[in-house]
Image: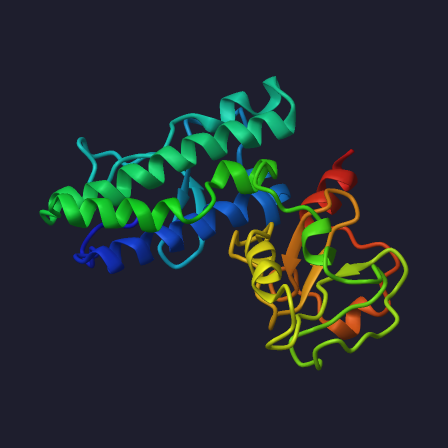
Length: 253
């Protein structure tokens, strides 16, 4: 719903705007599903889901002026809420959200005269990120086996401040990212490649060996500890971890 009074003008600024809006949409469709679900009451008027540059989101009526300052998201997402399975409805909203994100980014590109090379660079930067749909549905490979593939024991853990190869007993049922190999150790490059393919189920960013991660025992997706507000100390007392999305779904059922 925000205007373009401070519109981005460079490829980097447009991409930063894209990432902020994308993060807000992913938050609505994964971390704050219950709140989003309640706001999309089919009894209300046509509603849209907006991602904001500051990584926030809102459900609101479409703007009144025609044409709008920015491309508008899909209209009336609330009407389909009770007519289909929740996961299918969220997937549908995610697909439309991806389309909207691209339209906003390339609207800025057109408005500020991006040339062929700039448009290509912008698309490549965007394409390096998983789509909102991929994050919401888990179709991007976020297998719990990827971070644990190079760990001899699935019951060892490591956070960013632990020394490489140091193993500590892990709470039963809780899977946490493994230590990385030391420099010069064989297979290091292959390990880093596989770790890089693992994406956070909340923000969609890549795995990094210096960050604390935790795996949901229900959907088996990995999350940054900071994204789901879990610290290594808290993880010590969790027997079975459920991410916010799985917890809210279970509570609603």
